Image (cartoon, rainbow over the protein chains, first blue to last red):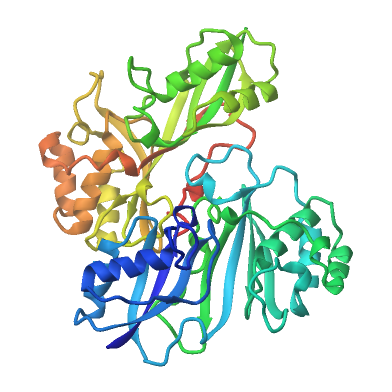
Length: 265
Length: 265
């Protein structure tokens, strides 16, 4: 029995989210089914956290304990060969028995992609959220600064599973304009349910002039979810990478430059 | 009646090439049908040249004469609203009556995209040709230099419509490695039938060590199509831009950086 961790990329539109759910195809189930077909072992694959239906991942991390005698390289190729299209195992490595993809995670990075060109190239255009209005990036950056740091983010989370505290640390929010799109890159130690999508939705309202940066500061202090912006649609959100104290995977986690149709544009 | 030119992007996998062909959906027909539905006019749309089934375009240029009273901006939006998915009109402008997208073209730029990562991100991976072997870029660049300049490219063209001469000028061939892919960017005054795909196929054989740069030089001199490499598959080829002596379209033609999943990777 050994402990194996994997770096997984998936097209969120092909799955009902990460976590196993009877009657719905999820990424976790797809990987578990592939491992069963491959080794005959009933294995539980644990991810660093859930992603909702429609949310994409470039660098989700998961781990599982497995008996197989296949070495890492053969297990990697065989697993990809058995896996449903829409998900790809980018890296696979045996790790210490103690490694836990969720409990050991000390940071996550997401990107929210907004397409600002009305008639984009006809490749991968369904992988971004489209905003027709011109966006005020200066105001968006000022509001992003107000949200950076350690705060009670209750106003920026939809009700989900109860948590001990709604205080979270956001390390940085970067607003990166590209020729025909905009990326909002959010890094933090951890996030509340739908928090990144509420942050993105709120920043987009600031960009459109519907909210001011000062109002965003007040909404954060109010702890009232009704005051923040709408939850931005799942299709624009990508889990970019999960950070651990120990180095994971030889080539490091994925960085945002590789996202189709966006960072190039 | 006015003359209108358009900059068109399309996903080659959605069409049987550019040129109208009874019984097959082509890009030309899709645009003509959209114009008919929109204005009631039977219009012939002329492109800068054909593209084969499966070949993509970021910056195909075409023109047509039309009676409609819709101004450029309204015609542009209405045309996109009527157009089949898979094709997008990126720009539209009224031009001089004399402008002809094919006869006035004085240069074209193509990119051939090769995916070198076996398990790429699950976004847009069908838009590149996959090569599993490691590629020797130094040898590929040396062979590319041998093919640059004015030559009789008979050995690098599949038999197609007869031409007066098979002498063509290739201005540059750039080999651009990215993290998980490779782009071969070919610019020239004009190309023979399937010439860019034969050049790409030949350079890939050089990359794999199956041909030497010196042999490529000899193949060019031989004028024998049987000696050059295989025609690389259509799915990796993109018409990037068409050059004219007069400036066309306010923001200029598209450059290769925006191609999904490749130039970012």
